[in-house]
Length: 275
Ligand code: NAD
Image 1 (cartoon, rainbow, N blue to C red):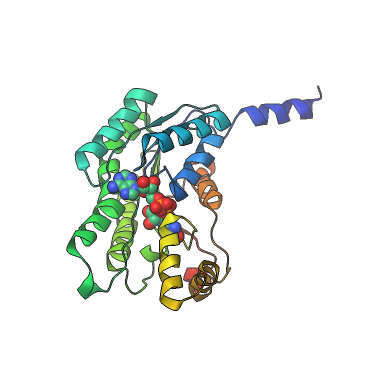
Image 2: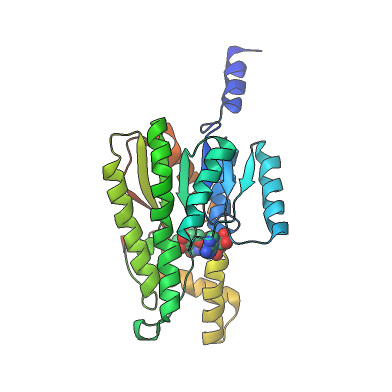
C-alpha cells in the first residue's frame, strides 16, 4: 500500500468527532434526527430524545446504530419538565460517560395573533423552545467544565433574528434563546466550552408541513403550490434547507476548527435575513 493510500485509509477511520458523546433533544424526527445522523456519521455516540412511540424509537435507534456503528441510546424526557431534563443529562453521563456535545433542538410552533394567542400555548412554546435549553445547559455545564471541553449548539431560527406576524411565542422564545446563547458563551469563554446558535430558514419537516397545509387550505391551492408560495415570500434561494445541511453545520461547530467560534448565531436560511 502506498503512503498516500495508507493515509487515506487512516483518514477514513479517524472521524472528526470520534467517540464524543452527543445529546440531541427532539431528535426522533425532522431537524434533530438529521443532526443526530450527521453527528453519528462523524463518530459520535448519541443520546436521542423526543416524543415518539416505542416502535418509532426502536426504528430510529437501529437505523442510526447500523449506519454509524456507534452506541445510540434514547431518553424520553419531556422538555416541559425540568426534573426530567436533569435526568436526561444524568442518563447520558451514566450510560455513555459524559456529555461532550449538547444540541438543544426540541421545538414546537403555534400561530395566532397576540390577542388570540392561547395562554397554555404561549407557556408550552416558551417552555420547550427556550426554558428547556436553560435546564439542559444548567445540568450539562458542570460535566463539560470538569472535562475542559464542551460544544453547545442551540437550534434557534431566523425568527431569533427577525419577526413574522402570528408567531409571538415562537419569535420571543427564539430571540430569548439567542440571548441565552450569548450569556452562556461569555460565562464559559475560557473553559474550552463553546456555545452557539444555528438559525435555519424554512426546512420541510412536520413542524412546517402543518403551516403549508394551513396555507393550502386558506388559499384553496395544492400542497406544492402552497410550499412554493411559502418559500418565495421569505427565502431567496427558493429551496428548503435540508436537514443534512443543518447536521453538517452542527458537526462543524463541534469540530476543532470551530473552537474559537462562540456566542455566534449562524444563519442557514437561503438569504432570508440578508433582505
Ligand atoms: P419537528 O416537529 O419535526 O421535530 C420536533 C422534535 O421535538 C420532535 O422530535 C418532537 O418529538 C420533539 N418535541 C416536541 N415537544 C417535545 C417535548 N415536550 N419534549 C421532548 N421533545 C419534544 O420540528 P423541526 O422542524 O425538526 O424543528 C426542530 C427545531 O428546529 C425546532 O426548535 C424548530 O423551532 C427549529 N426550526 C425549524 C425550522 C423549520 O423550518 N422546520 C426552521 C427554523 C428553526
